[in-house]
Length: 235
Image 1 (cartoon, rainbow, N blue to C red):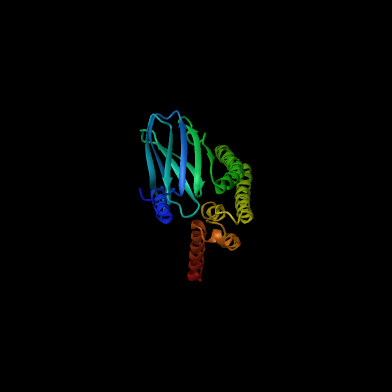
Image 2 (image 1 turned 90 degrees about the vertical axis):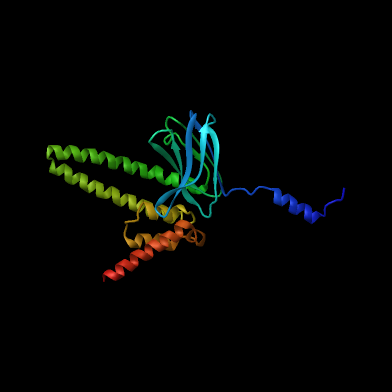
């Protein structure tokens, strides 16, 4: 048998090798026997399916997709009912592991993956405390309206405005302190998109070149340019 030249052998090996997907989601949904799981993302304001798997007895599975830039993805579970549930996670190239349960699909989710997801979880932990207080204020406002307590209503309004300001300032500071993460422009676009333009501009100008060139970095620039153009036209 003739020996293959080294170059030809290398080409043969590389040709047979499978190309690794950009993003691999390894998931385990404890208690799931039957159902369909979807990997989705938002494209042009619409949720699109990137991959899916029909689960029939094996609660462990993998989903894959190309990925150009770190982005928010969603793991949707259809339990053969009319109601879908979704786990949101910030993904980058590589492997993301999601472990959860059928009973509490969203709330039991443990996610191990990108550095961006860890940053997003850090942000959510602080914001959740502000959101909880906001929910309390809604209940207090309802009770004050029933009793006609004007003084209480004014106090609630003042505190609510303060909470909103704290959320905006915390988000701006978090984005500035993480200007090298794609989470920064994402938060500007989703959490404080209706903030004053100078807040958004400050975040945008602070982003590192890599982040400015990311999906959310480019979208933030377009969003800010649109606001400035609109403001100019109003003059």
